[in-house]
Length: 135
Image 1: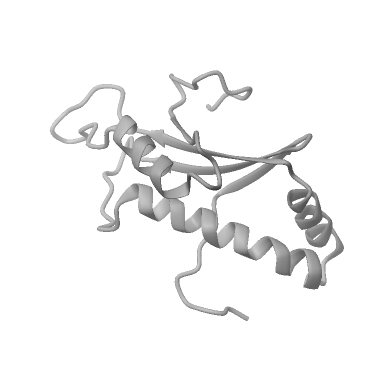
Image 2: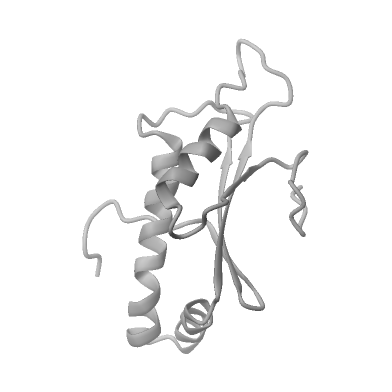
């Protein structure tokens, strides 16, 4: 049962040793963003909701794999947020590059600094040294 309406989570959680990666994906290559909420605020809320769900899942999950995954996340020593922000390679009137990744990254840093002081906003052609690729 849901506690409140509108609770959302990040798209992916990956665990690499002691590092927990919270990954959100936004793809605006074919359709522009239509939500009125600021992108950084939307992602930050998803991060908060995701992390808030970990302890209850660790303690109360009826599915063993869900409980074990929540336990592994809770054992993490570092949290990293990555926003994969895909936009058209070239701006056009029909599909503009309307979102400045640097601005989103700066705003995210201010909101979620206690969770990750260095969140990354990346795209498939500029991964900022991350260990994975996107196709």
